[in-house]
Length: 231
Image (cartoon, rainbow, N blue to C red; front, side, top):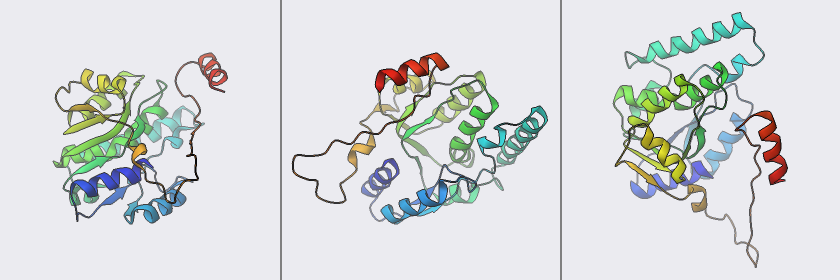
């Protein structure tokens, strides 16, 4: 829903423009193929895998040596973006006149771990490229934070400061952007998912859709208490 409404908003703002989607999912993700087919059918856009050859699952269940090697691979990708060319995904970003980061709650880390930081790095990689290459970018209908380590906070701050505009889904996230140094180019907007049009006429009386998600913030005891409260 968030990607579909973002594409619709871009087309409404720039009629006749060509829109391409660069996924947050790498080719190794089991969800990628099905999600990409559905998005292509809903929007008519071509959808490419996330170009970063690093998945946060590279760190799951690894020992110290394996995790260190995965971290070296991540750093190698970072070094490749410094010249601005030849980095994974650079050609896709160079093609665009503007990059729009689709809404949702993706810019966060929940633990002070390498794996959580690498997930954040993979998600913001196209925005890092856009800033380096010189393409303007917008964060659209976003929830931001928390950032559980100084490194993830630094990464998020650099991405936020480079944005032409940050549209937050709530005031809490807008304050995260302001704390990163943004002032005039921050605004609060409704969740873009509410702009999704029904594919068919709803039944009389209306419908209420509820999406259940596992809580992700807090200690194990806090998560259990949150789960019980909402259930």
